[in-house]
Image 1: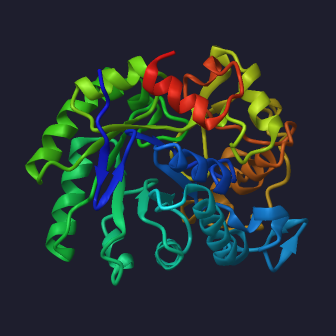
Image 2: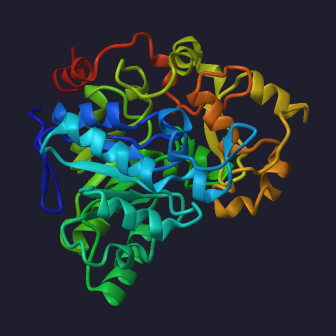
Length: 363
């Protein structure tokens, strides 16, 4: 099978591979810039940009962590990441992943537009008002993440009625993805919710609104998986965990090593302060949390609105901002390490160029 290019709005992605947005700091300028340079779509995570360049862009710190949402997310840090990624990618399209659940979502979307991002991808909630934050930037393509045909229908109806526009593409994420899921624990295991069973109904729904490209995500690992998704009607795939196994991935080597050492049974669904189950690797932290002996929860950064300033964090036993930032910085004792279900297959660190060649050629 020869893979066709992927069109998202006015942008053409030469190789139909979207690198998943991974935060904190897993997919910033080096990873995203190089994925775009090699013909895929590099995606910058907007989460925790106050940590960029050793917290150089966070104006206030407490316990060496960015204080409040205004420092955890840094506009200047985000702008610098986008500009540095652009130096690598040249004129190839670049995307930003902006979680709908974060505090200040609309401001972050506007910041991305001002910094010259081409495509915005949003999940962690149903972004029914996403277009209102990109007013004045008609060339910025908008891509919501959904987990069902019903969710896509709701978004299309609302966007068309309120804003007279439709998504430029849609990411369909199944329950094998790393990080937060769009399903409950029980729904994650149900056969009808597996990605291969979701693609056809979502492609059919997308066609009703004018052939919106569907990008399949969650458990896609190799060329065979890409071919399978394309044969079901997807126009492209999104892959996150596999890109952690690259030299250019922005995270600390210790984070990559946790994946390299992970076994199949180590990757499990767990609770999260965001309110959705999350998929990650069983580590020292998860064992401490199970015994209610995890690190203190202070809600220094106030990162996501569903957590309700640490109330939900105390329920599940960990602060997601602190623990993901620890993982980014290489702390294997208190870090939280997200992974898709196939993360145990990672067995080497290679370049982005090598990885994309493997995915395209099946070597």
